[in-house]
Image (cartoon, rainbow, N blue to C red; front, side, top):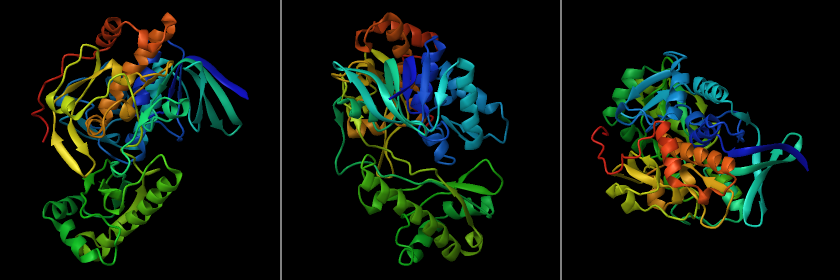
Length: 423
């Protein structure tokens, strides 16, 4: 099999977690490679065509140099790139975001490949030593001292044989986001505030059975365009994003659903929405929850709601405990212990993002993009340090890791704080 690359740190998955991991590692000088199966980086931030990048600036304060670098590169493109910056996040034009991420990766010296999907893990004597990647030139091997799984679905952990967890029958719903245009933005948003969509749904449901119970119309950084995030598959069953059959069903159902939503607005939305047009949907359906690694510690709902502190904290999570359009509750800022990003038994690997070690409810407390980038940053720094020291990540000196993260602007004393700025 072709050898594609040999690096110190390999990061698989180029969403917010992978971006944080790749930059965290590369900034320490480690030879780092980032792999992404799509044609661009950004994950849900990019392919959900306008979703707010939540928890990037909690209370308007910096989270780390890694977060700041992405935001600075995005802001450099001006008002066309960034639409809204508020309490903790921002809404941006995703086409500028895709390029801003490239700019950030280039600045820190991280090598990357797109159109490169990891399809298996290389394992020797209980240690992950790399991955097999599907490319247009055929399958290829990438070898690494340390691999960081930022796939969202714990793919590398699963392929390696590491223990993973998944809530059969209770997985969070998926959503295919969409953009619409040819509408007066202010009148359309007023229509939503006045419960117009809910009235519309009552009239339209019989003709358009796939539409959700309600949805909003959010600003998008293009003239006369609006962004829609909604309940997606919630009312149509539980779908497993790691099952080929179920993911296919969810994806295809959701594309029909998006068309029905626009048709319903045109036919039952009165004078305000009668000319609305669908201009784009996400590159793929947005998956909120699948597999999670079984780590040395499993974060719990109580950890999130109580704002628990840990001596081995390497990141923190803010926002709401939110199971997509199913449950939404307040929580406190809480720590992510290093043990939650280390697989319980498999060496040579760390995990970051929404597939860290957490229960079903606790996973929903940390999936916001800024939080995922934070755990990615920690995993990337840890991977670089472990590679340079020639040790397994689980053997790393936690105090030295924490010192490195603090130098990168990570405040590891946030746990227990309430979040009055959240509405």
